[in-house]
Image 1 (cartoon, one colour):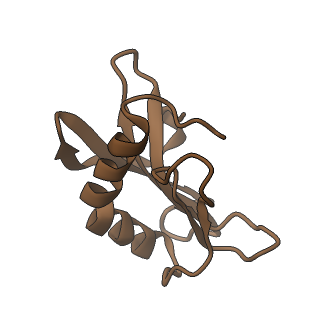
Image 2 (cartoon, rainbow, N blue to C red):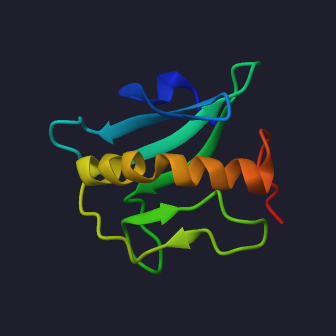
Image 3 (spheres, rainbow, N blue to C red):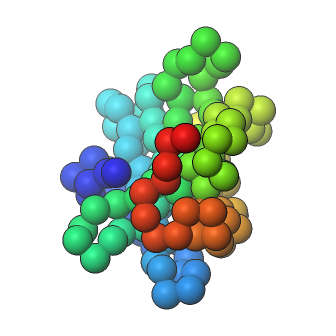
Length: 119
């Protein structure tokens, strides 16, 4: 879960079945010159908590750097995708915007409006 204060900016990406999906972006040291970044597609629950649906970031992993965390996938499925054609924060946002409806629908189908089981 994330909080708005975690983001440099947030905006609405799409609506699916009454659920508002938003994209939030964060970058360090700044969005003008990001060395590290994350763009997150999420929705907010009535209590204000946020549920992450998909995230593109450049946190280092053994398998590579820039990757897509596909939290919308079924419980037990591999969520990390290192084969994404994304090289920066803006491409990450574009990717999430382009796929917001599909990712949102898939999340709701697989997990409802709750937190994803880690299973």
